[in-house]
Length: 108
Length: 114
Image (cartoon, rainbow over the protein chains, first blue to last red):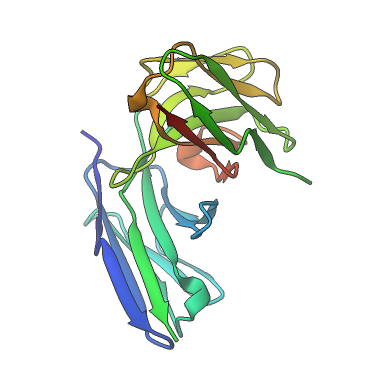
């Protein structure tokens, strides 16, 4: 069964801290996705990766295929980074299986 | 460039009423999806359409029907709404099957069934 587990479920940080969110999956992937859900509810795709590392601004996503594990890092966190971060893995039908999300709150 | 547009944004129904959630994308994407999001659970796939003219069941299809009207539009219908269908519904699209393609989401529809 294709399962996606995220940790932690909730995370509170002070502005400027380095943040790591973890994602483990049970079935080999074609690509692992990271998404951000804003407090207003909108969902945007941050990264899609199948190997190595990708960087966009202060966000970095890494993946270890052998260990079936991915991490999302945020450097120099800011209150505007407060959101729910979701990882998702490709399912057998070509769809995505989503984790339950990590709720991040960054305090000024 | 609107991306993925969902209507309505909010809806309250009584048990047994029917309604259709509309979704349209202007990115010429082949694949479209309907998800529901419930507290404490990840997004769950209701139905998807890999390409125009095809639809397939996802993880939680019971109580729903879909229509891929054309390449742009993918609607979700609740024939007889039940309180268990109270949820936030998201439509999404991607150029191809989403396991290998970035997915773009609509703003969501918050549905309450009383």
